[in-house]
Length: 311
Image (tube, rainbow, N blue to C red; front, top):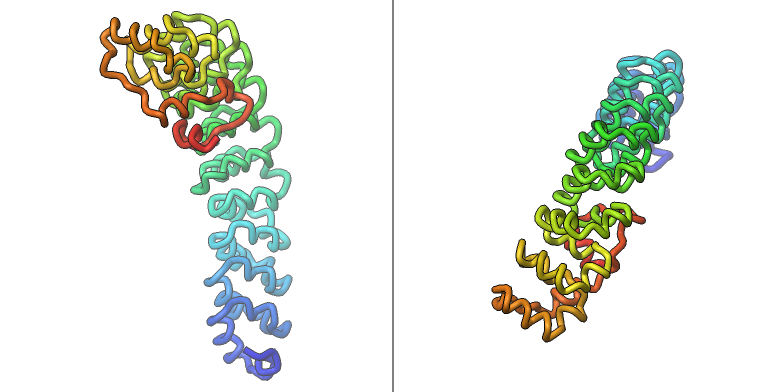
């Protein structure tokens, strides 16, 4: 509507106009911004409309609650006791974890509020840990809830948890990729590594060098996930004895050997001798094996195959 026309509206007409488009509230005269019915009509459409309400109504507990239930970050516009009302803060972070940024400092120490934030529907809800007080970054319940959203959440956890084997076992069972953020000593724990690799083949690269050079254990790893050969050291991927031993366990490992080995006539002969005559690597398989062995220096969100295709 034309601004001049809006200015000529009476109260009932203003309410009707706001009911059509909440953004008109920002153009309304002060008495309409202080009109509870008009503001409620705007909030039914978008909680962000709270910004344009009068200071009196931005302190109104009922209206503020309605606002944050639709738009959590509208908490930033709350005033007075409404801004520190626990029920309102809980409703806001449940609706959108980003509301944690606007919660009073005391709520950053509130376990229930943090749990509500990290358990939100957004796949980024774990980032609410950025606003957690230090003592809550060491709370197992909160960190495990965040790991349920994304294994990357572990990077925001207290170091004591990342060095706790019992806790890491729980975390790895939720998302194997958390091994990337484990204490270096725990990355060499074979039980943790096997569970991580079972879920994500690239996590084998998180193991310390001495574990990566343990040929028998690496064969055990390949029993769990044959694709893990793709991320093992070149010394193993280019070793015919090791590759054939892996292929005897599961032929799916074979495409992840080094290309020069895959193209070797000697390997073909030895594969035939090992009963692997039916295997003929396709060009796409050979190309997919031309992957750097080390991926643990960066986080990988997509599944292994899609990630390798794109790198």
